[in-house]
Amino acid sequence: MTDRELDAAGITDPGLRAAYRHCRALNARHGRTYFLATRLLPVERRPAVHALYGFARWADDIVDSIDPGAGTGRRDAVLADLARNLDRGLRGGHSDEPVVLALADTARRYAIAHTHFADFMAAMRSDLVVTDYPGYADLCGYMHGSAAVIGLQMLPVLGTVVPREEAAPHAAALGVAFQLSNFLRDVGEDLDRGRVYLPADLLAAHGVDRPLLCWSRDTGRSDRRITAALREFEALTRGVYRQAAPGIEMLDPVSRPCIRTAFVLYGGILDAIAAAGYPVLHRRAVVPRRRRAAVAADGLVRVLAARLRARGRRRGHASVAVPSPPAVAAAEAPDEVPRPVVSHVSQEVA
Image 1 (cartoon, helix red, strand yellow):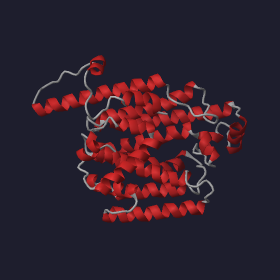
Image 2: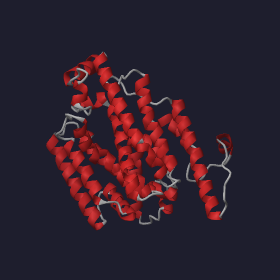
Image 3: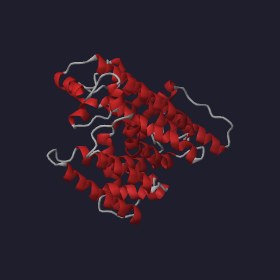
């Protein structure tokens, strides 16, 4: 976390500043797509986003990345300890765990409902025992806690131009859409962990079951039935993106470039998977570098346009001339959006 971000957010306590920096590092290491999109937000809002995503990454690491030899009981105990720490932190505002300290401070500053965090922890615990989902409704029950509530947590930070309850369903849908994209991209890796997030009834409709998925993963061979099932899951995911899309225009204009950039980049994962022929059981599909750079550049243009319009409204102007992308490239970018973001997106976003 840069000092400028923390100063802009009014975070002055040394221990709290260190906690936010820790969350930023977690987000940068694990969530490269959204970390880079976050850099398009106003500088004072970034620490809160890093706290929310840093905590989510920390809990997810307990489920998936803790000592590989640790059994379910050990992971459950660590998650339970984190849940107790979280409850104390949210109630009292203090914690010895950096991610909880930063999260509790963010929840207080933005009046984020504590139930969202409880639902998230319940989803993390279910990952320890649930290895597949009979139908899409069952998967949605899980994703409410693992993904939808992330969108709801973010909404107060992003701000809205409509009543928050009007934007909430779209924010929740966007969290689900992002997770569905990850599920499709990570089918092989999740199978290695013993989990299948594609609904069993969707797979069965194409003659696919877990043994067939394992055969494909182990042999490196494809099967037309698996491809058909993956294609249907992609179509289902695109439907959720369509549900989420209207919510972008409901956000504070200065937050829209960040969310639109994440929306396009995550949607690009689906494009990359389809273009490659759905090889997700054998390798991870990535968005082409040129596409990532173009999306980042567009986000940068939109940020500058939003800043100029907001500045014009403050000064009482009826309209503000917004420069074209070439002009933006030649002009000095706003302090809130460092120049390296475009090259970073090109190099780092997966």
